[in-house]
Amino acid sequence: MAELLETAWQWWLVLWPHVLATSIVGVNLAASLHALLTKRDTRSTIGWVGLIWLSPGFGAIAYTVFGVNRIRRKASKLRAGQREVIHRLEAAVPSDERLDDAIGPADAPLRSLATLVGEVTERPLLDGNTVEPLAGGDAAYPQMLAAIDAAERSIGLASYIFDNDPTGKLFIEALGRAVDRGVEVRVLVDGIGSRYSFPTSVGLLEHRGVPVSRFLPTTVPLYFPYANLRNHRKILVVDGRLGFTGGLNIRHGCWLSKNPPHPVRDMHFRLTGPVVTQLLEVFAEDWAFATDERLDELRHADGSYPWAPDLGFTGNSLARGVRYGPDDADVGRIKLVLIAALASARQSVRIMTPYFLPDDAICQALGVAALRGVEVDIVLPQQNNLALVGWASDALLWQVLTRGCNVWMSPPPFDHTKVMVVDSAWSLFGSGNWDERSMRLNFEFNVESYDQRLAASLDRHVEEIIGRSTRRSLAEVDGRSLPVRIRDGVARLFAPYL
Image (cartoon, rainbow, N blue to C red):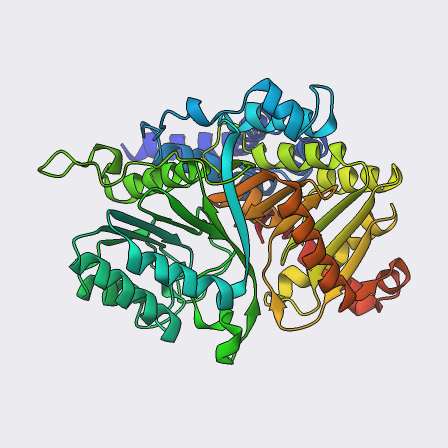
């Protein structure tokens, strides 16, 4: 036996370099084939394949850890088999004649945009809506609380952040009163967003008897702004007929008249009409994912359906919900919408976003719009609440400034508004930011509207903010000191994950 072991050891000493080399080649080959088959960006593929072969062993490990897109696969696996909630909306779908009158003929830019968004979202554009912009918590919170107090059948509330603070307590008590009245109430708070205050609002809601659930609860530390697969949507639907959505979380800092210690400007929207059904569908799907309870199957003993949508017309706005997230078959859904909107612009594009980290394709679309003579205004906060995001954003502003886009830095307090307006005729608003986190890693919800009155109102709002802002020039961006440019450049390397 000893002789056999000695012989085996001698053979291993001779063969191990060959075994190791063969193993490394095999691993490198497998990693390279995976990159070739899954990476859609040619430069990314070349970079990873080069690293794999030029750094044997280490390159394949680095690709396995950082190069494999697990986010979409994990999201798809999490939602595998989940049935969509879809209501019949044919009665609210506008006719061709109505579209001709409201948007233009089939070859008009906005009409083409409507066609593309319909194909991308697989949801109809709906007529008969009313959309009212609400300036921050000062306008939105009182209306939302009043709607909760007036609810008769059902209340669905989803929020990324729901703080345990003076404003959060007002919502907790209002929701508790609704439960006491016999209203069906469901509250969904993101698993990380629920941890922004301690003790969390979830325990207080449960104590008040409000059915509440966390979306993908996590054990990460209290403040972890860069986690993936978060439900960033902000949706409130009351009695299936009144909806609120936009950028507002539920936290005291957004109620500026209360003089909060950390003020945040934002914008929210009040919606009535058939489009509220699309808000309800998204909330019901998210609630079913988090709890396995299907609201569209819930019936009372008397046969009544508390979550029934109200398809009654309330106005003349054409609107459509745009849901997107990492579980989409096409992860670039919202990017297609943004690029198409930029391509349809003829006079002006106005954008407000707190986080501006678009990829090269969107930067090029912004630049092309400006080069065509479209006035492109991008409004960003002068002081970002996430320093790393602000640094990374500074590192890419040259891409839009060199093509003629205007960049404006709005003064404090920090502005969390998320709005896009094209030609004072089309608007997009909701929870999504202009960064990869919103476009690829989080679950978001926006609304597009073909309503000239609403778009003009939002245009005036953006113009008012621009009037108080400082213009960012290319010379200023290029004139940053070397240490600052290095800092910003390093931060930009993390842009796909910020």
